[in-house]
Image (cartoon, rainbow, N blue to C red):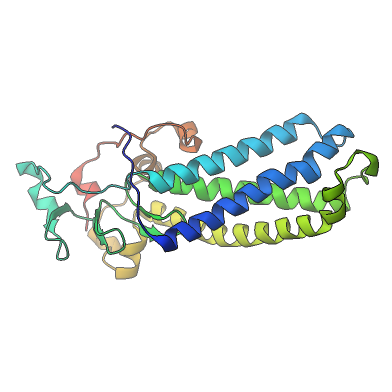
Length: 265
C-alpha cells in the first residue's frame, strides 16, 4: 500500500490538535530544561533517562502526526466489487455509494470510512481501518509520556537532592515552580483522559466491535463467531509480529481474513 494523505478541513479539529501539540511541545522543551539536563549535569540521573524521555516524545508526536494525516479507509467513488463478495456490501443511505459492511458515513468528513470507529477531533481525522493502529499507538505513548513526566515532577521536589543554583538558568530558576505545576496539571489531565479512552479502545478490539457498533447495538454476540485476541489485534495493526505493534515508523499491510469473520454485521 502506498502512503495516502488524508487532510480534513475543520477549524475545530485544528484547534483541538493544536492544543495537543502545545502540550507535547511544552513538556518536550521544559521538562529536559528544568529537570533532566540539570540533574544529569550534577550526576543525579543517567543519560539513559534523557534518551528514554526523548524517545517516548518522538514516538508520541510521530503517531499523532501520522494518525492525523493518514487515510483512515476512505472508500473510492466507484469501487470494484468482486462478484463473490457482493453479499458483504451495502448501499449507504447518505452518499448513495456501495460500501463494505461495518463501514460508516462520517458527516464531518463527508464520506464513508471502512470499519470506522469514531471521528476524533483531537487528531482532526476519522479513526478507521487504516489508521486505527496509529491511534492506539498515540494513546499508548501519550500515557507513557504523561506518566514519565509526572514521575519526574514528583521526584524533582520530593526525591532528588536540591540543585545548585549556580548552574541553573535565571528564567527557569525564577519560574520553576510555576512551570512544573503547569506540567503536572497537563500531565494529570492527559493521563486521566487518555487512560479511559485507551481502555475502551482495547475492549473494542478484544470484542471485535467498533465504538459506533457499540452505540448502535448492532453487534450481538450471537450474530458473529468469536476470534482470539491475537487475531483481532493482528488485523488492526496489520502484522502478526507483536514487536511491530509499537513502531509508528512503518507502513501497515492489511491481513487477509475470511469474510465470515471480517463481515459479521
